Image (tube, rainbow, N blue to C red):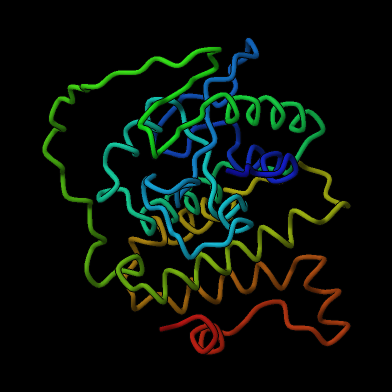
Length: 261
């Protein structure tokens, strides 16, 4: 079994904002004392038999940034225990929402935390064929019988409100695409005098429209599109691209033609 690169984990840690990706979880990945309480988590499992494992996924994709989360140990176990509830779409949405709000630019010390997180990842080895689990131990404890308590009854996942942007797959994906593009362009501006915040734009949208963009009526989607497009166009990188004849973003129709179903 391979593993993520140190560069990838460093970027993942910065995008996590040093906090668990589970909604409203306040546990840090690394405490102020330096204790590492978070863990690297694969959306599509890193090994056969793991939750949401995809045999068609290339090894490089399996350990790429898009397939990784940072979670506290409690939510790592919780999500593993409910693979149907926490499917690929749900975890991908969780990752996108968390990183758009909590993410920040990389710092030099992130490299140290990446090394520590990778050390923790290597400590746990699961051998699917034998059923044995070895955790940082010179020996292996084996058992012929394992008693498993029944899981609590699953609660249905909350559905987006009908008629909102969040309930429209194409519109919500396009807004997130624009937000990601803005964050990419704005965070790369080395002339900034203030620290860049990946969650600021989502907060600005909420302040202007009075509610989170996913809860806005679908009829107002074009207003949100135009606002975020305008913010992108004002970035230094977008202005430079415009001077070279490169578009800063895809129009909604172009986005659907390329990524829609």
